[in-house]
Image: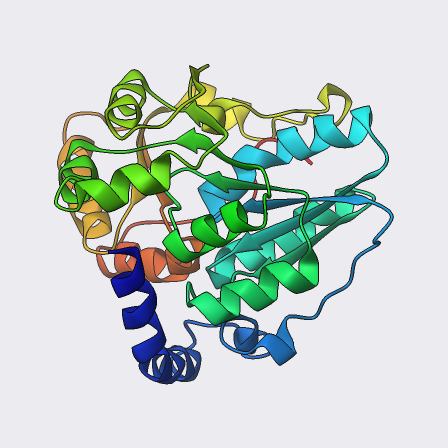
Length: 297
């Protein structure tokens, strides 16, 4: 199965290039940096070979935010660490460009497609001393190549649902060969711990969900919205997807019939949809406001 996966990804590589170019045209990819995903010549290698490079791969915003406290603590403990954070989405890249400026030696790149020769070149040029995947980011070619190069490999805040576990069990031999290569597994829930044990993973630890961990500078903590929240009743629709926002706004209208001071707060899964949600709310003759940051900094 490993050989089959490697061969298939190589065969469809030209189609994946076309897909990335198409996504760029429809503004789903960064118009200046999209080539980082598909061409070794665009990997933009900048590192200090005297430092130890730790690679974190976090697909999107939630995963990225969960590793920022980890980078912060590692930087405090060792000034010889260098951090490379890779993501997949433009929204996470935009956030990384802001958040990583807080660290002395951290940079962001898009992770290349999981095609064998691309990943091999990526690892050979960056030469990471350790790799940590975040959440459910499982890239077989990356994992097999890291093992070949004897690069320590871990997964942080690992999350495997029952549905995903059943899919892995369609290819049990390959699944076990992949998960057995992790040197460290820190899981986000006990169900995932059980699944990983069944998939032949080792060194599995459960400390809770890292997405709920965040370092805050209390001297900069300004709650501009406490008065608003204290004077009103409100409910929160978190991590909504397209199509769910309209349902939430209709629910708000119904709630308003009985609770006059009810406020609805919608936190979309992808923040790029904020303006669209505001437009939908205004179609319902609702007063809407976009809050970019609501509690600190």
